[in-house]
Amino acid sequence: MTGLMVCVAALAAASVYGVLHRRRNGRVRVRGRDEGQRLGADRLGGELGERATLVQFSSAFCAPCRATRRVLDEVAGMVPGVVHLEVDAEARLDLVRDLGILKTPTVLVLDADGRIVRRAAGQPRKADVIAALGEAV
Image (cartoon, one colour):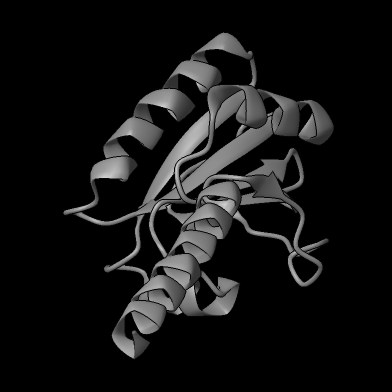
């Protein structure tokens, strides 16, 4: 009987964790410590967009990174003045540490001045990226 109770408690805890993780993954949000922080072309390795920039931190063996790349390329193609930059997280560990990036893909939405407006950890939805761009532009 005790084994059954432990099993039920473990399943309940895993279910709660799974639901919370799924709700937070890919959500585009503002993080307090990022607000107002600026990133320039020199740190990112590419020119910023004239209206906004989508910065994606990815790694070589990340499957969601490929899907995120397609979404961000599509959004950047739809909105004039928006550029998509991809940064290899493994090659730029200094920048990853400075920005507190814990997983790939992580997407930063920058305004025209290079200030971080929004951040998404995980694969964001296309509609969320477009909404975040609306705030940056």
